Every structure is written in structure tokens, then in C-alpha cells.
Amino acid sequence: MDSMQRIRTAAETVEKAIGKAEIAVILGSGLGDFGNDLTDAKEISYADIPGFPLSTVQGHAGKLIAGTLNGKRVMMMSGRFHSYEGHSMEDVTLPIRVMALLGVKKLIVTNAAGGVNTAFSAGCLMMITDFINLAGKNPLVGENLSFFGPRFPDMSRAYTPELQSLARESAKNLGIRLEEGVYCWMSGPCYETPAEIRMVRILGADAVGMSTVPETIVAAHSGIQVLGVSCITNMAAGVLDQPINHEEVMEMGRRVRNDFAALLTDVIGKM
Ligand code: HPA
Image (cartoon, rainbow, N blue to C red; front, top):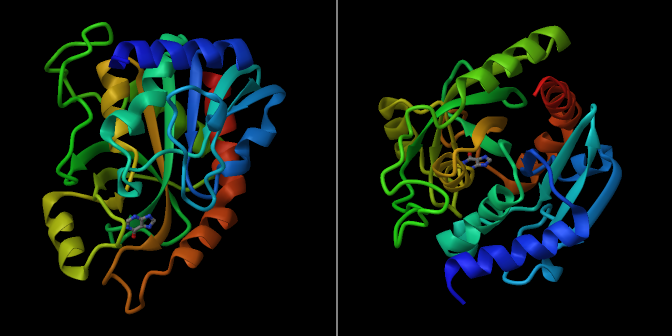
């Protein structure tokens, strides 16, 4: 099956099961249960969507949910695909193209990330203003799917300034600390070395993580507006004199969950 046919088949199945939406959210580690905040929700498991890969990471359930949140129809991806799991770039970004076919115009991408900027602290939220791609991969490599966008798409506004303004406003109104900065995509799955973190700091990164950039690139290619928010679950390697532990990363994600959910709920209401 060619790429376009694969996307269309998946999109038809999703539409039949849960319908369409103009706003979508990708739930990163810790936010996995945010889908429970939707009312009138319908869901479909990735296993029931033809062509969808299966998520293998703990804390990433693997379903699409659509419903209403703060007066808006929203589709949520609970569980995302990472390239470190062995998924191809095409697989990692398939859901974004399915969303594009289903009429999604605004996408909120969330993740857990390590804090590179020493002014940050574990547990804060960071709105992504730009990205650096150090993973050595790009989801647009290969035949251009011109149905979605151009061969050489502009990335100078990959994270939409208007959506950033809304998020700033929401954070201010809710009294939630919202830092801002550049997210650097590293391939993982090992956490970075202290030397790598010193390097990315010199390069201009404020946070590092193992996701989000492929989805952002494909969304931007399709003309979808993107808002990115990272939960700084830990300070990146070498910033503090302590090792990074996946369990602690997940635990911090859970602790920040309510603020994160409140912020997104408010922003969605404004979209
Ligand atoms: N590095 C990369 N990815 C991450 C980190 C980190 O320190 N914390 C959470 N996701």
C-alpha cells in the first residue's frame, strides 16, 4: 500500500469510530490520562486502526480519543510513537497525517523533557518556541506528499506565535509558571551525557527530549498550527550531581499533571 493510501485507510477508520476534530493534543509521558477530562468521549485503540504501529513505552496507552473539552471538540493521542522504539519516521508521524485528513487545524504537542537551561527547575513547564533537530532524522525525507505540503517547507514559525500568545495568557491567568525555550530533539533511548548537554546549551537549547520534533515538522508541513509544551521532569544530565532515572521522570510528570492539564484546558477554550 502506498503512503497516501495507508493514511487514507487509517483516517477512514478513525473517522467512523470517533469522528473529526479541529484541535488535537498529543499526550506526553505523565499526561496520558488527560483524555479522561473529555466529555462525550469516543475512543479507538491503535490496535484497531489499520496500519497504525503499536506503542511500546510504559505510560503510553495507545488510543485516540475524541470528545469535548472546555467547549471545544478535541482529539487526543494517548500514547505516541518514538523513533527510539524502532519505528520509522513514517510510522511516528502517521497519526499527524491522519489528523490532517480529519480536519485538524491546531495541534498541541506535549512531552517530558530534561532542563538544559540552568534557570529552570524540575517540575516547571516550558513552552517550546523553536526546535533543534540533532536526531539525524527528518520525517519529510523521501517522496514529498504534495497533497499535504511543499517539498521545502518553511520552519521559521513551526510553533505558531498566535498560539504561544494564548498559552502565555492562560498561564498568567492561572498563576502557572510557564518558561519558554528551544527544544532539542535527541534520538535516545539513553539519556544524554553531561558533555552532550553542555554542547546543546552552547547551541541554544533550553530543553532536551526524544520526541515532538518529527510530529511538529509533519504538522507544520501540512499547515497545522502547533503549540508545544514540555514538562521539565528533571534537570538534564550533569546539571545536578545525580543520575537520571526513568521512574523519577515519570513521577515528576504525574506531580505536574494537574497544572499541565489546567493550562491546556484553558488554552483549548481560547483556541
Ligand atoms: N533527556 C531526554 N529526554 C528526556 C529527559 C532528558 O533528560 N527527561 C525526560 N525526557
